[in-house]
Length: 95
Image 1 (cartoon, rainbow, N blue to C red):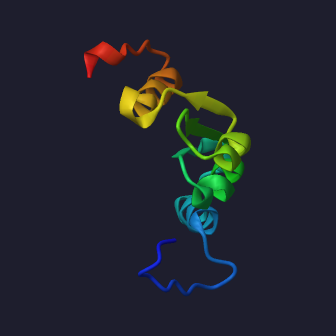
Image 2 (cartoon, rainbow, N blue to C red):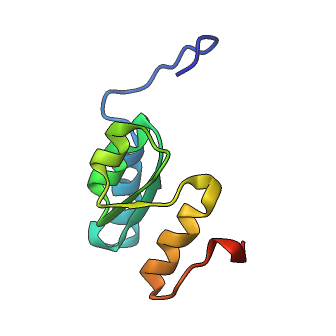
């Protein structure tokens, strides 16, 4: 991910696999999961989640994997997505 790191992981590892494990442990369906992302490493999770959000300043692949695009992370995009799930309105000026 960055030049000074060496990352080693199992090919089956990822945020989507972790979410699947947790949902199974909790006895919840994947449709109960909402996820937010901005990077390449979030694509699998956004596709797996019942509802995947990408912030507007996410990488192209991440935006393509999402069900919805919200404002950038600098403009309260995650709060906007949570408010939409809860059925409320979100005003960026309120944060």
